[in-house]
Amino acid sequence: APTIIIFGFKRSAEDAPHDERNILEVLRRAASSAKQHGLTLAVENEPGFWCDTGTNTARMLAQIDLPNLRANWDPCNAIGTKEIPYPQGYEAIKKWIVNVHVKDTSKGATVSCVPIGAGKVDWRGQLQALVRDRVVAHVTIETHCLPLLENSRKNLETLRGLLAAAETF
Image (cartoon, rainbow, N blue to C red):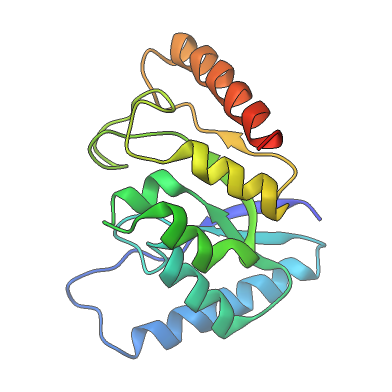
């Protein structure tokens, strides 16, 4: 089924404990509606959102437990939450993953982007695990790293090398 990437609702200082129940219900209704159209919704983990870490996203998806509500795993975004993306976040979320965003950061996902492999994400370990666990058939490079064209080419070359190494691991 075609996949639409969504986000899991921004948090605020005014959030109350019952707000999570409301968010779960909205996600459940959205997934049910999407199912009628043959669509899968993939919630992306994002700093500052209810679905911020791999662990929190997996916990929320498990509470809803619908086959067409999955995860768009972004290890770089997990860096911005202080979660260790691999292996901690990945192990929590892997059964829910339908897509993976590939980018890297030296400070935090919302602060700065660096070429893949030059930042804090353990892409070698993460990609080896994705290949080993057969989680996805492809990954998606996020082209946030300036200059865009130069670093997109560099990221593609690096990613191809890391995937080739992961497949022989």
